[in-house]
Image (cartoon, rainbow, N blue to C red):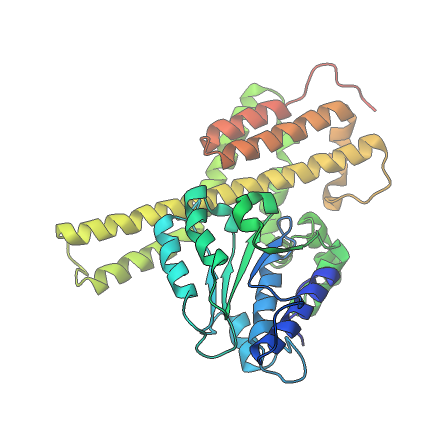
Length: 397
């Protein structure tokens, strides 16, 4: 099994990265880097679900691979520890906040200056590089401009435009595309033992997002929650219904975000108090209180991101529903994303026009933009739901 096996539907990108890893092996052995396909900074781009992080990890594993015959063999110590997240020279950088902070970036830049301790390369793999604000990006810029000879930066972002021009101009870009649903389904069957029918349905519902498809395929409750969200438009008859539906959706997002972080928050707090020798204390000293407050702020930011991620996923699902409605209204000969909701899709298509469907898709897109700009979630979702209500003068097909 190769490290590239889980990089689904990205043949051209895999060829590029594999060639670079082979060139990197020659460079590490004393060869000249000039004229090779290897460089010190990479930008892996692609839409959500295309496998940016998976491709970047596979490339990192190939750089750490010790097999003399195959680059990225998948079974040597370098490959297995990289994929497990335990390789000493591979640092994965991620944030659970809304954005990276400057104080988070400075120690990372310092770590990048160190020589590799076990393998040929020190790899700094930065997921969600698009979450850097400009000030934070400028801290990273110098490290990318003047890297040590054995350090490689792998940045992941939806598009090159999500990074400042000075950083993206110093990176080699590898663009990923949305894989075919059939390829994602095949991966779920092969890797996770999912029933082929369920795997294909989940892959289509997730719009080929591998992580979401796996969750839908393995968690019946996730499938039920998604179905409940997609039946909301058919239940909205007026402004009152829209406001109530918005409140329900935001409450659901808050509950899921809390469930995803609550247990971890408690463990982190207990561990901090134990480390500071304040476990079981009812009144904390000022120095301890300040550290607990800092932890609570970080946890609050993490919960906010979790809530936004839930809401954004719900909106992506709604967009898939209206995409299906538009397909029916235009008579396009393409399969539906939500095949299990065909009756609801056709009912919505019969109660509106294609123009109104496009307007509703615009409303969902606007709500996503507002959430990304820190608009209060309830206000953004209420405005969206009001736009999804039936409009006067809808032409029945």
